[in-house]
Length: 309
Image (cartoon, rainbow, N blue to C red; front, side):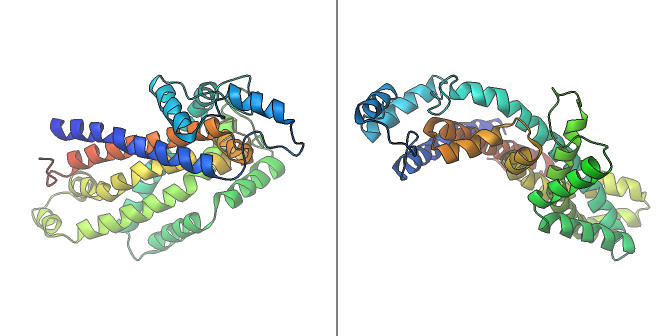
């Protein structure tokens, strides 16, 4: 197991290197630039700006310079927000996105597993039909619909919650409720369906029938034998789900005005702010790679049949 963890950890580096390389050249060769405006700047001013940010150098030289900066932990200056560098924007906004995503995924996992188990135990009953219908709604209805509907009901009509804001505002923790619920809904639906299908398959297995024949209590069977096997597809889903829930919070952050990393990702894309866009891509990629690494380890701990030799 230790050798596997070391090999996988070493393998993360070339994966991230490939992502950084492809992203760098794709962003740079696309039409337009960070200083293209409606009002054309004088040629001398443009040359001075390009010289300041080393944009007058060859693409390969810019790429080498950027790799050296990343190795030092410097993601570079922002071209459109010169008062701060990319590190400042990421380290001030990423914790908010991680908090929002972690709360949403934690609730989605807890509710999804519980509902999926209940649905599997009560299969083909009205409980099963109601739960799976709600899951279908959660999968099909997009976030940009769920968010405004919740805002309309709980903020504008009932006046129970604020329409937007964050923890630092006068509403405090109440600002978390609607963004977290909005982001939770589709992931809860996926996890509920995954866990139901997995638990149903295990309930039909021979070893579960054997434990029941021995007179073991149903609660012990479910939590000691069935749930552990039922977690495997959910654990496999959690890696990309966590990265997706952080990156997918872009929509939710825009709706509820959450000061997360998503707003800078969108603005950097529109502004062609090369370094800020690259910084967000690197952060999102690192989260995805790290979570897949964690999932691989958890999968082996849950399923002893998997060999890491």
